[in-house]
Length: 224
Image (cartoon, rainbow, N blue to C red):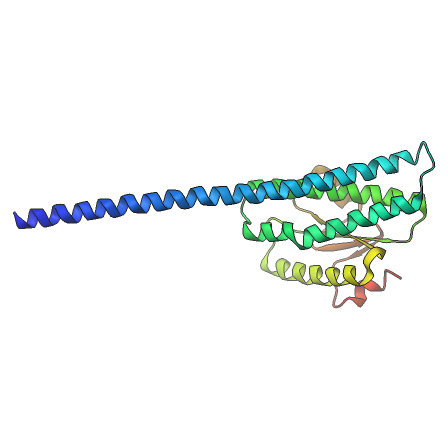
């Protein structure tokens, strides 16, 4: 009889522990979901602000065709947007992506940013030609979804060099990071157009491709 009571008591303790464990697990899943949703929402808010600024910039560019606009204003808006892209990539977006790599919502938002940056790049080329400006485009194509450990190390090295160059050169450089493996047809088309066959690749002024660097001088020599 005592053995049965002891067994029943142990069973009750086990069931209580199981219930508590399930409750804690479900709370953890729920909190994780809420945190992921919050990250996606914050990145979406950043995207919408950038989209608004780019739309305004594109309207300025299109207006060149019908009225005589001030190139200084257009170039300044272009530089301001490039700086915003740099700060976003360097700060908030990178932080949220690092905190949650495997997440469809974050990947989707990243695709939107890639398209936005590509649109900015195309628009910036047109403004540069129209206004005969001398700033440089540095487009950095990299593997986002599943880089090998070797790629990841190389990309970190490239990113650090480009960050230093952007800070050093300031308004002279439009630094535009774009993931090359996000399965976006428009970006894939540009990758084929510029014959980019590996990641990471640095494309300078739509002419010079760099896939291997040892120091900043290997990039700076193309910037005049």
